[in-house]
Amino acid sequence: MLIKLLGQFLILVCISHFCFAEQTSFVSQKIDKHIGKYVEEEAFKGVVLVAKEGKVIFKSAYGNADENNSIPNTVDHKFLIGSLTKSFTAVTVMKLVDKGKLNLTAPISTYIPNLRKNIGQDLTLHLLLKHQSGLPQHLERLASFEDKDVSSDEILAIINTASLAFVPGTQYQYSNLNYHLAAIAIENVTGKTYAQVLQDEIFSPLKMGSSGVERLNNVPVNRANGYRKGFLGTNRAENIVSYALGSGDIYSTVDDLLTWEQSLYNNQLLSEKSQRLLFAGENNDFGDYGYGFRVQQYQRAAGKNNGTLTRHGGSMDGFLTNLHRYTDDKLTVIILANIRNFPIRNLTFEIKEIAMGLAVGDRNRAEFE
Image 1 (cartoon, rainbow, N blue to C red):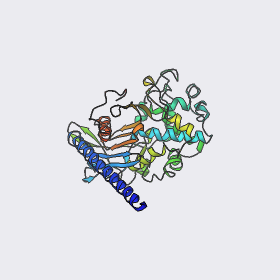
Image 2 (tube, rainbow, N blue to C red):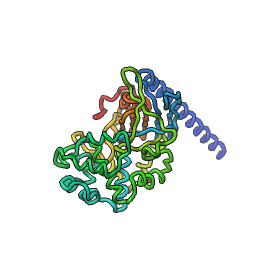
Image 3 (cartoon, one colour):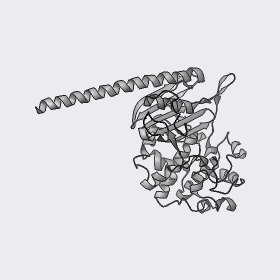
Image 4 (spheres, rainbow, N blue to C red):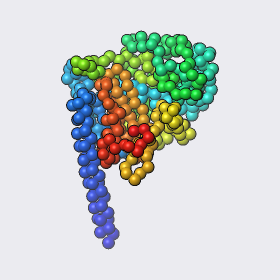
């Protein structure tokens, strides 16, 4: 009798595994076909990964990493991730908060004494991470460093020329300067470079061996070239990203980013309190912004309430990035593209809809989508 029951159990397990594999294969084919339209119509090139409950159900590369030498993208290629860097900066701040080295509500001048007084005394890490500082969206003088590496001291000197556009904490305005200052605070309290702190606190512990902070002297091997779309086709886009300290200077792969994303939900990096603060989003007037992540709604299958989406994207010359976690369905969509511009947000949502069995474009009920 026991042998018979064991046999029946094994049959059920095999059937279940076969059905899951069949369903995954069907979904994978649909996703690949849909991405093919973007390759043909939008010149998409890059890598896409989709995971369910942390397990990869789709991963594929498209287009070339190097057009001149006809080198195709592979799933192992590295890409600049643009503003998704901000999520790493925010988590690093929270790790240092957990260690008692940083305080979210102390004046930022506590950690950056050379910041101009009438800026430093009114700002905190909380306001910087939430984009509620009043600092301008960007400074033209920083753009002049797009052709050479720039030091943290040089970035701070330029920020000291800025003025606050509103009383801190009263409005939301997305600004790279907020995360430059957060990165400088990280450097000052640790006595290390931003790159070394990320290596010590995130990349090494998580074994993210294909991720790092890029500079002219360490452009990684196997990093895709960036391209921009123009009237006459696509052109190579050069990037020197030190001017984007803490806000856009990281490179990574889809596999490393999945490892990173999964670590944020199992207390590998942060205390439970810090993890809650990370994903404590504001309302739409304040950008739906937590610490380094936007927190919004997404539409689930019929009969289910809207779910919680945590996301961040990245955009810089030649590269586009999206990392979406559809929390209630434990679904992750990661897109790393070495082409700009194309409708990456639409593609991300459409992949989510295919993976969930929804009609593409079916997102009428969700507040954000």
